Amino acid sequence: MPALVLLGAQWGDEGKGKATDLLGGSVDYVVRYQGGNNAGHTVVVGDQKYALHLLPSGILSPGCTPVIGNGVVIDPAVLLSELSGLNERGVDTSKLLISGNAHLITPYHRTVDKVSERFLGKRKIGTTGRGIGPTYADKINRVGIRVQDLFDESILRQKVEAALRDKNQILIKLYNRRAIGVDEVVEEYLGYAEKIKDYVADTTLILNKALEEDKVVLLEGGQGTLLDVDHGTYPFVTSSNPTAGGACTGSGIGPTKISRVIGILKAYTTRVGAGPFPTELFDDDGEALRRIGGEYGVTTGRDRRCGWFDAVIARYATRVNGLTDFFLTKLDVLTGWERIPVCVAYEIDGKRVEELPYSQSDFHHAKPIYETLPGWSEDISKAKSFDELPKNAQAYVKALEEMSGAPISAIGVGPGRDETIQINSFL
Image 1 (cartoon, rainbow, N blue to C red):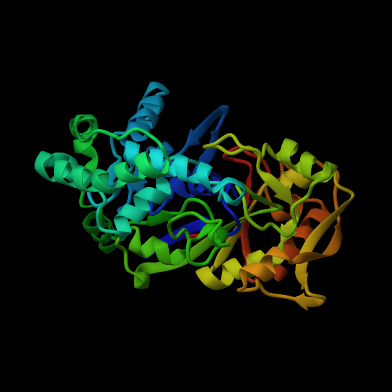
Image 2 (image 1 turned 180 degrees about the vertical axis):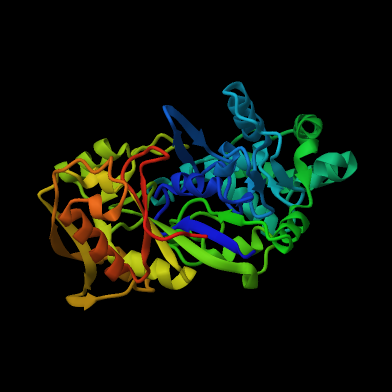
C-alpha cells in the first residue's frame, strides 16, 4: 500500500491536525517527519480540544500507531510532558514509536537560539526560541546528539563536551552569558533514557515493512511550504523541509512508495513571525479574521498575521510538492463577508507576475492584485455535502481550486472532527 503525505501549502497553521485526525481512523501509521515543538496542531474531538506540539496527530486515533521520524528534533522534556498530559486525559500513548536517529534539543540549543535571535535586533527572524535551528545546525555540522546516544553514557558525554567546547566560548565572549556545564546536561539527559526507552525503535524498518504488508502510512509535516528552508521565504523560514521531499528523508520511506500528496490550504492566509506577506491586512478585516478564526499560535500563543487567500502561493505549493489534492480548511470563518478578495497575481515594479518570484527582493516588494468574489451569510457548519453549501460558497471553493492547480477533495466547515465535507477520498 503506498504512503500518503499531508503538508501545509501556505506558511503553516493551515489546520493540518484536523486533516490528519480525519484520516487517522483509516490509516495504520501517522509519522511526523520534520520540525520539533515549534509546530502545533489543534485537534477538536467532540467537546475536547487537544493542542499537540511534538506528537503526531494520529496519537488521538486508537487504531493508529504514531511515529516520530528521524527527521524530527526532540526536546525530551517537552515530549514527556506532552505524553503525561494526554495520559491524564485518558489518551493511550503506549503505541508511540520514536526513531533512534532523531536528534535531541538540549539546553544549550535553546539558550543559543534565544540569545542569537535577540542579538539580531530589527533583523530577527521570528524564531520560537525553542532551540530548533541550532539543533538542526549541529545535525548538519555532525556534532548533534541523537536519541540512541542516551543509552551510551560515554558517547553522550563525548558529544556534549565537544558541542559545549565551542558553544560556551560563544555564550561567554559574544553574548556575555554564563557557561553551561557538561555534567548538568549529561545528568539530565541520562535521566530521560529510562523514561523513553520503550518507545525507541528502528522506525524506518518498521514503516517499510508496514507498507510491504499493505498497511497505510500517513506522513505528516509541520509548518508549511513557504517555511521550507530550501523552498520558502528564506531566511524567514524553519530549519527543515516541510515540503514533500522532506517526507522521504525524514522518515526513510522512498519516493516511489508515495501515491498521494495532500496540501492543506486555509480559505484565507496567515503566518507567524517575520518575513514578507503580500496579502497581509492591517485593517478591521484582518482583525476580524484573527478573532473569528482564533488565529493565535498553538505553540507560541503569538497573534498570527492575517490576510486574504493568495493563489500565487497555492500554485507554488502545488508545483514544488507535486500536490495531488487540497484540503481546504476554515471556510466557515469567511461567513458574513459581503465580498471576499482573492489575490490572483502580484504587481512587481509595475509588471503583473503570475508566479512566485524567485528573488527575495522582488517578493518583498510584491503588491497583491485582487479579484473580488461574492460572499455568503448562511451558517455552513452543518453542511455535510458540497451541494449543501450556499451557491456563493460553492463558487468560492471552485474558484480557489481552479486558481491553485489541484482538486479540492475536502473542506473544513468548522473546528470539530465531524465538521468536514469529503468530496473525494484520499485513500
